[in-house]
Image (cartoon, rainbow over all chains, first blue to last red; front, side, top):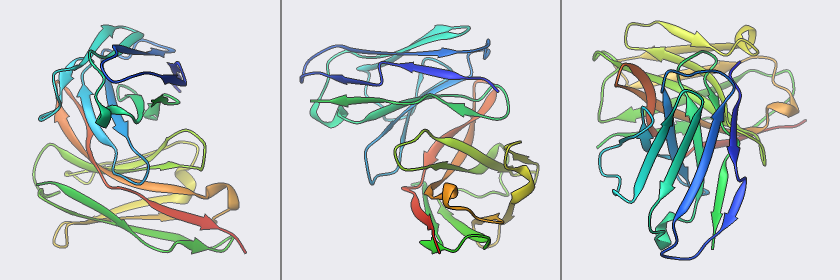
Length: 106
Length: 122
C-alpha cells in the first residue's frame, strides 16, 4: 500500500495568514493527488485534484503544488470558513489511501 | 446539483451484516466516466477507503476487507448498496459514500455525502 504522510497534524493560525500543509507519498503516485476539506458533521468537500487543478467553485486562495512524492496545499490568506481539517489522497494505486489529516485551528 | 446521502442502521451487533445505502442525485451511474465508492473513518482515526463501483459495473475492493465487502448498484433508483459481513466493534466508524468523477486521466472522489455513524456493540 502507498502510505500518505501529512504534516503538520494540526496548526494554529489567524485570519489572513498563509498556511502550508505538506503531504508525502511512500512511492511515486504519478501526480494523482487530491486534497479535500472536512468540517465535523458536514460532507467533505473536494478542493483540488491532479495536484493542482481546482475543483469548480473553489476559491483561488487554495493552491496545490508538487510532483512525484511530495505535495503541498497552500492557503494564501486564511478565511474564517477555512478552519477545518484537510486531507490528501492518492488515487494512483489501489488500495486508495489518505493522509492522516491536518486540523487548522484558530 | 450533485448530492449523496448515506442511510442505514446506526447500531449493529457483532457478527451481524451491515447494509448501507447511498442515495444520490444530480448524476447517473449509467452515464460514462463516473463511479460511487465508500470510505470510513473510525472515531479519532484516519480515513480508510473500502470499495468503489464504476458505471461499467467494474468493482474495486480494499484487499484487507475484500472478503467481507460487497458493493452493488441500482441505476434505476440512483442507489449504491454496501454490505459488510461479520461486523466487529473495530468496525465502528462514520461511513461516507462519494462520487468518483474523471479528471486529468483518472477517477477521484469529487462529491461526498456527510456520512453516517455506525456503532457495533452487543
